[in-house]
Structures are given as structure tokens and as C-alpha cells.
Image 1 (tube, one colour):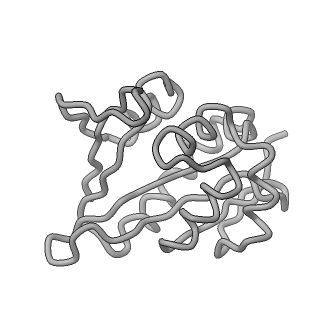
Image 2: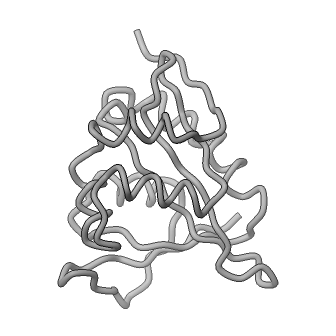
Image 3: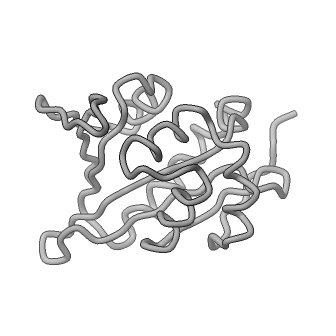
Length: 152
């Protein structure tokens, strides 16, 4: 039986619940990109954006959000950090992605960020969402990250 999904406003309590169980690739990205451990990374992301938590069977398993890059151009920065429950509920997660899109694009026409080139699960999901990857990569802490853009 698959988990029941619910979208709620993100809270610090959700950060405390997700951080110690964060997917290894997500934790690595927090450390490489901004030098923060999982709790500090998810809390900083939540604090600087419009953030939503996904509860699976009532437990916080995923947090995502957007923040402003360029208001006039309708560009935002998108991020998502979660636990292995995402992979365990992959099919339902993909179905709910449509709801993610409506939340993500509530304020922006385009969303950008970078993903560690070894984070294959996130890259496949971004491709499934229709992300366009740019030829030029960026480097954080010596690791190669692929820049992507999602369009409404």
C-alpha cells in the first residue's frame, strides 16, 4: 500500500524530522554547495523561500520551495530536499509531481538551480519534469553540478 501524501506549509519541526534521515545525495549537495550540514541546509532553504513540506502518512518526508532570482523576468530558484521515502513511494511521488508544479510555478515562469552530476535520481526526475540542462556546468567544493531550468 502506498503512502498518503499531504502538502502543508513548511515548519522548523519538519526540518528537525527530515534532516537526520535526508537522502545521502541531498545531504552531500547541502555540504558541497553551501557548506551546511543537513539540518542547517534545510532550515536555511526553508527560511529564504516559500517552502512546502510533503507529509507521507503524516510524517514529513520532503520539503521543497522557491525563492526569487529576478522578479521582473519571473525567474525563481527551486530546491527540493527529502528522505528515502521518496524512492520507496516513487510512482505516487511522480503522480504528485503535477501538484508540485502548480505550487512551484505559482509565482515564477522559470525556475533554475544546479544538481550534483552524481545525483542520478534527481537528474532523472528533473528530466521527467521537462528540465533543460545547460552545457556549462558549475563547480562547488570541486564537484561538478549541472545547471537546469524548468519552464511553466
